[in-house]
View 1: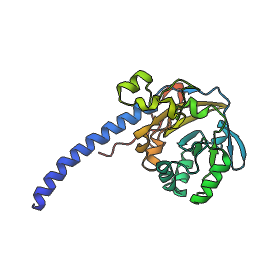
View 2 (view 1 turned 180 degrees about the vertical axis):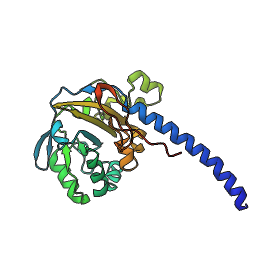
View 3 (view 1 turned 30 degrees about the horizontal axis):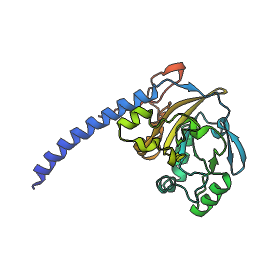
View 4 (view 1 turned 120 degrees about the horizontal axis):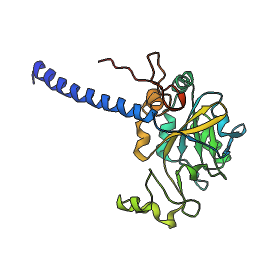
Length: 242
């Protein structure tokens, strides 16, 4: 193939890439404008330094991204896929999120002693928080247990799960079962709002700090003009460099 032929093929692909990016930007805008739900339940998590409420997990910042870490109380090790994603976290990414008023927290259902043991084994510096004994995992549908709450996963109830060929989630003999997910929260004054959750392959969309920020209500919060969202909350725009 000549260089001219390669350039022609590459420009055709570039047009498709730009189309995909424009679609993604539009999707990110729709995500930022989702309605928010106030969190009225007083969740308490156990961390390395003792109990923390959900508002305390924000560490004084406006936003919180929670990684739902698949780690059942009777497991000795955490989920391999979740573990790999935590391995890829680094101080620079977490600092970048912090400059955008966003805290990243990892919450698993195993007791804190098991989480701490696993954290030491992996050499992680980021704290892990335990939701053991609380409703948190069940309320956000990352622990599936029909005896606790009606089965729902990725916004599908039992009939929709059966239709999608995912009836294995309804097998009570295998419950409780852990599932992957990420949830985003926004703090407005003393109130906390749930703004977004994603499950299954949706958790693969993060791709660095910008990908994580794209899941939040305030977006990337760069220095260009930002649209106003619901409740007067300014939500980060994405620039167009074309």
